[in-house]
Image (cartoon, rainbow, N blue to C red; front, side, top):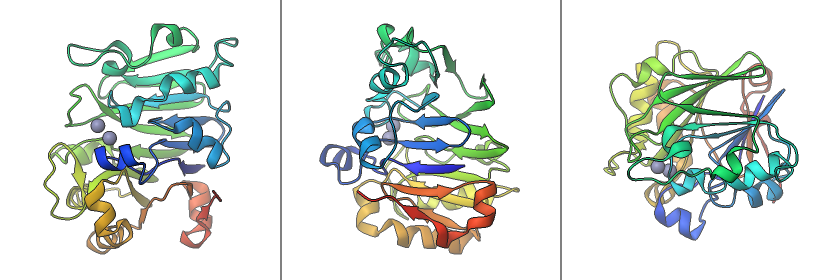
Length: 271
Ligand SMILES: [Zn+2]
Ligand SMILES: [Zn+2]
């Protein structure tokens, strides 16, 4: 399985100025999952050689624009603009149903285009074909937001979603092959409700069964200034877990391929 990053930006400045893309990431294995299709997800698919129509599951962690903006577009791509009812949308309750603060992000018009819709709260599971997705807890501005554990082809990929670090977080991400952490800010960063290098270190240290590879992404201005590669090296140094700073268009092998490939085989798409 490959994890393909279609945007590694996060935070208002990086989003609005597209200093890094905000298209989310894809897990490409026997099925294709597109997670957190933020602004430009469709364009980044085209830019990085991903066919937007080739997607089986669209996963949306929470109802912030940098994660949910292009979800409706991707549903149209997945279903031939509603001609073929297929695929699944797996998302937080806030994304699918809305609440007092948020309008629903997936429209009623698009909801019926997908074969299945799963509105998940933390610890709930969605099973679609051979893929299992479990929602994890977050502490973030969208209180109903979630993270995900994706299980496909015998590979387990954890995704923190947007969250600050909290004590019990480790329990939810034990035994992942790859762990993707939305690490908005560098070491010492003080922005609330978001992870930084310090949170990443704490989470990895808290895990008894550590991931084979940790990936940081969803970078804000502070992180871009500090240098994501430098921060990734610091995380690796502090935890002993191989840590990669994702770049737009980067493909990171996870699971079986990961064991064979190693760091040197990381490929970057052109564009
Ligand atoms: Zn975000
Ligand atoms: Zn957010």
